Image (cartoon, rainbow, N blue to C red; front, side, top):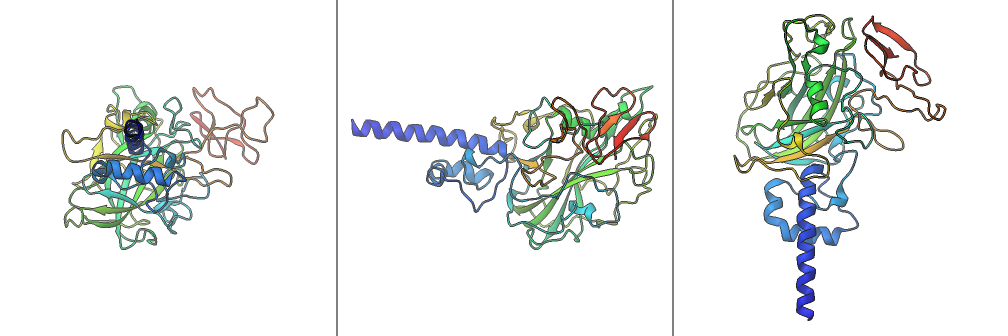
Length: 382
């Protein structure tokens, strides 16, 4: 009887660990030096799943490690206000982003990571727009080889590894009705699959995820940059040394991909910065979601092992740090203000408050005014 009970316990633990492992593939890359109060159980999970976990990433393996604000290798900016000065060092990793954090995320060259962006704290629901308020524009990802990702300030050269930009939808369209990378983020639950080039050298890197919102970009300084940087340690790979650009330096306020009126017919659009490195990947704006982009939070993320040795992990992009709870935001958010009357609405600073076809809240949060910044198409709390 004792042997039978022991067998049942082991089978139950194995089932729990397999479930935890699947969930860990969804929640992303976590701090490799911290475990939860369930550390004993997590260690047992690692022992039972060690052959599987080694293929993907090293982590405590427990679903209790899920952090709604993302992994601990991300540099959190102090607010969700956009960067608008392309000559500022804030263009690298957002405000305060030149200072690193302790954690690093381990990835493998050739692996696909899923960068995830959302505008509300703790909200990974597909029912809500990831990039709201008509913040149309391209989505780009850069990497920078550094000696130590925890201390690098972003002054080293950057190379682009991913781009989801713009595509015309047909005759009679305007830029705002065309396909954009940000629209794809909304369609794909805030997710984009980004391949880590298989030929880059092993070592530490900064990974920079960027959304450029062009809804008020018709005047100089109107484009809004929302960025987050991750601290990665890449294993495997080769000896490739991609050409790089500097940030600031790669962008100009007058670049046609930055200074642009998207409320008129567009025949072409070129995203700012260099072309995507040959070992990276691009997505055609408007293309269908695939792979991890289709999975719902909390579900397992299938790897692409059947087609190749590459695997998929998730990086939940968090671009703001609040006093009470980190804000999972890559754009200005529309939220109810704590100072508003019960049932009243309030639009946060830089959120949309009016314009052609807009039907949402028109009351700005305290300290902001609803202004006609791109008449008659767009009004914004400033």
